[in-house]
Image (cartoon, rainbow, N blue to C red; front, side, top):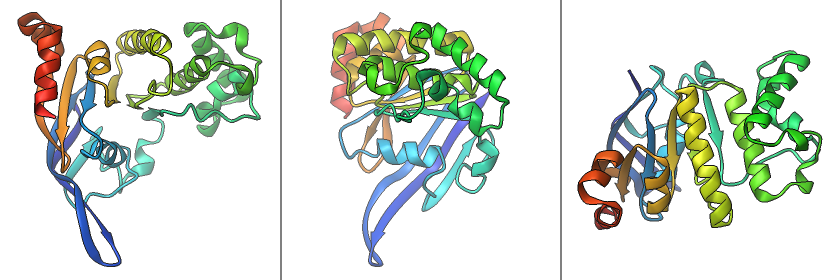
Length: 245
């Protein structure tokens, strides 16, 4: 089942009534339920604009976007609780414990306190953080804080998980571990994942499919990772992705 569709989407930014540039133009793509798709491209290629269009923070200038059958901008409230986002910055609330942060999305959804804390703790356990549940964010490492933000996202039982370069601020060893954990959790929960990254290596490690963007934001290549690795190998796949960027 198709859960995300962009059809000839353009987003034009203006200043003082004068046209500045197209951030996306003729952007068409689709993502099926259960897919884990990485979006890669050079800085300024439109990845972030696509991300903000998808979650309903921006309205397209032209074209059509559907997320779970809804227009994400005009039907923003209808998608509440169905989308979850993991950002580059963990965005934890410093006055709340790890557990309270993990359960925060459930609190916004009006789930009773006992139930949301129990579910938040369950997800902290799945990410190996149960012993840190009562700690404040400032006492956690960067990797631990990002694990809490991942727990917060999964606890809401979203249909689509959106990740905007969530590991770029971490050291490579921690990032590699979290990439594998995130891929495992997405597979176990059978949700759809959209992963925006500037790293080709990260895209290959975490995703099943890679979309390559080029400015003004549009898709220039679409790779099935498993079949591409079997046919070409890792280095050749990297070269071909880079060639399209």
